[in-house]
Length: 162
Image 1 (spheres, rainbow, N blue to C red):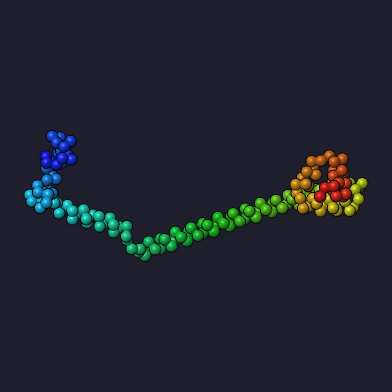
Image 2 (cartoon, rainbow, N blue to C red):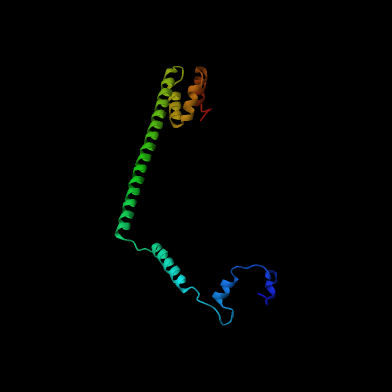
């Protein structure tokens, strides 16, 4: 440290580990002359501990781990199957309910159209066909007054509305 130009800022500063490092690496850097034991016993212990830790990571699968893996996989498959079945049933029920509501709406529209005696049969059939294909028009039909409904039916009949 005393002869190296790059460490001038460290001169006359306390460096508690310097003596220990000199013992390990030696006073003569080129030959290691004056160096003591590098602590081989400690290095061997550390390597053995590292080997034990690494062996835990690279453990070969045993019958226990394989069977527990298979069991966990089987449970996951069953869970996914149950969830899928419940989801499918829910979607089916929602669709069924929506279909029922649509059919009920069309039934009400048909009843209203049949009550309109001043609209001819061809116009009624055309309106029923249009409403059965378009649920939004059927819903709008219910919001109209009787006079608006009659006008709407006449417009459908003379192709003013398609």
